[in-house]
Image 1 (spheres, helix red, strand yellow):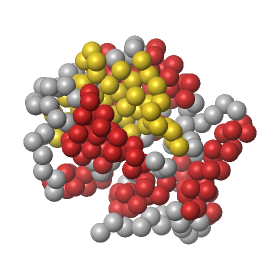
Image 2 (spheres, helix red, strand yellow; image 1 turned 180 degrees about the vertical axis):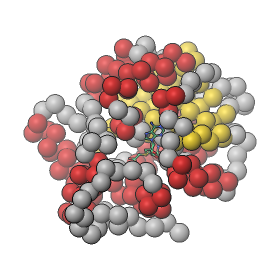
Image 3 (cartoon, rainbow, N blue to C red; image 1 turned 45 degrees about the vertical axis):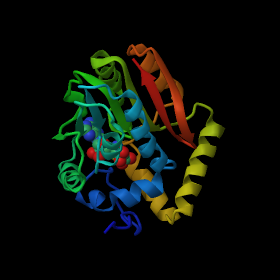
Image 4 (tube, rainbow, N blue to C red; image 1 turned 180 degrees about the horizontal axis):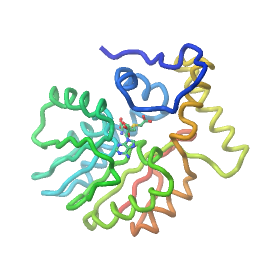
Length: 242
Ligand code: GEK
């Protein structure tokens, strides 16, 4: 049964930096649903992207797969023969649990699960690379290199789906989006204490960038086009084509 996220419900004296450990894994589906506006839409449309962009006899990568929600959507969307999905996460607790989740789901498309840092990968023969809320956890100076590798290895006509928490240059607009996100969390049952303690835990761990910064990185890396296909408050998803 899915457990409710109460990790930040009681006051903590010292708030440690957020980590994807066993305590997070246990509540992850509830946590992400109640924290990320549009999460269910983004996951289901990731399947729609797979339907359109997965090429026969190619690989689809799900980077930062957590418990496999995007992996399953990709798997359900693929309708060409000979595809393989590579799902990657550097949290051993996530990978362990994801393996159990995937075992209960049957499909003709094989999934290889890797417990690895996505920065160490090559993306040979990829037709689709999905980064759903993962790039935001990669240290800033390393994001350009990762994007360049993805662009270099993608097949022509291949696609990148990048979903992120974003920030805005205009301070008033940034504040408004932040407040609307907090309203969303409050409406989903999180208290002010939970919201503020989680915010502290993520402070130096999740580093959002502006939509312009994402577009520039993606274009500079060599993609032929990039645009937003979804946004709700300070959460957005881009699709880029090589
Ligand atoms: C979903 N995509 O449900 N290498 C590999 N994994 C990483 C790295 C890294 N360098 N950094 C972070 N992660 C999922 C949700 S969650 C988003 C993704 C969130 C992993 C980390 O362990 C975690 O499982 C995932 O990226 C981010 O569609 O919790 O806000």
